[in-house]
Image 1 (cartoon, rainbow over the protein chains, first blue to last red):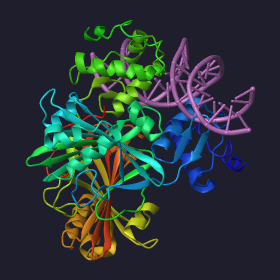
Image 2: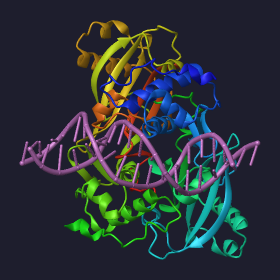
Image 3: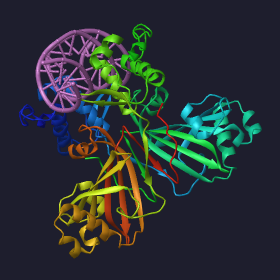
Image 4: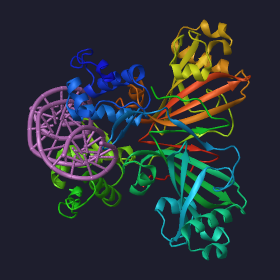
Length: 255
Length: 255
DNA sequence: AAGTGGTCTAGACCACAGC
DNA sequence: CTGTGGTCTAGACCACTTC
């Protein structure tokens, strides 16, 4: 088997002043570069741990880091495989447009109406407590894989309400809300990016376990001097590289 | 003691279909919101684990997630404290300027010259193998805390070389390289954001342990139709929220 | 010296995918 | 059913900070 090249005794883990899992990560990382192809499956964790003479928990700590850096992909019941380079997803089209405009590659999933939104969102939306808000769930797919899940909050009194309220089918309603948005003037938008962990619902949509690291992109859409909508998009941190600017940039890993 | 409010038996961990650490994280998160002030120190891990009737490793898994989300700060030998809200750091000044321009809050640390740069950087810089490159290390401080470490790669033949080469003091040399950059025309810049883990050197500069999660911002500066410089900035993911756009946005946590 | 979080071990059982 | 990664335990020792 291919992985036999990652032999025992070729590296001295025990004399290092640094943690074993750190050393292990380095060794594995080098092995991935030189001895494995994208998509190839690694030996299972118990074998790998034995091969390196460490406990399985220690081996897992190294694998976790490599997965965090987008080098590995682990699936329960299946195995650990070498991940392809991160896919670059454009986040900042130079053109400032509303969500749902022609050319954005988000797909509406469903919409509902609510008067309770997370406190942080309410603050960004500048809504009063119990003010009605449309909530649209969307999904972004790139290269056949789901890369992001989104919750879009739209102030109900920012869009002409009658046409939307009449729609009861969730999917149709989502389209209706997005369509109504396009009629508004867009003054500007502000974005933030931060690290988070996937909530249960987003995790399902992203085909990951709850708690997986995600890049949370928060966008605030301003119309007529006031926030009309707030989008909270969660991107898979392991597989995505967010790109800003005119054109797609080349891949670059952390190391 | 204050933490006594997070009592045993108030929640049923054992009947949940979801992992214990996940449940635990939720309970702790709620407790942080309602019963703790920013900066307050939590009971130590052994006590907390006993209080919730779980192994210390399980408790630590929950704490790890909360730290990842910027809710907690853990320091070896000291304890676990409640973290302040993430600080927003502006990444995309509307004005397109070179690094080192007046008004950017980066501080040059040192500079050296090298002909070996990471392969990914060389690709972005469009340099030939063994082509000379200036490497400037910079540091970004916000509210008295280090928030980011940066390595700036500048193509040696993009800047007038003579004036810089004569400078031997690393700090002075860093300033010289940055100063030389300002003379060039800046056509545009492209940015990417991805998740990474701190390398040993960056971790030291950021006052974190190696491997800590960081947001890696890669910027490519284009002059006269060719890349003149590439900046790789690593921001502390636990304490930072990157902001893009005209003005600073309000804080928003992942949950 | 005492107390903290960080690392590591050697087991066990569970949840899920695929045959 | 088997094999995989995911969760969990009850200990041990280490590195670091503070007194």
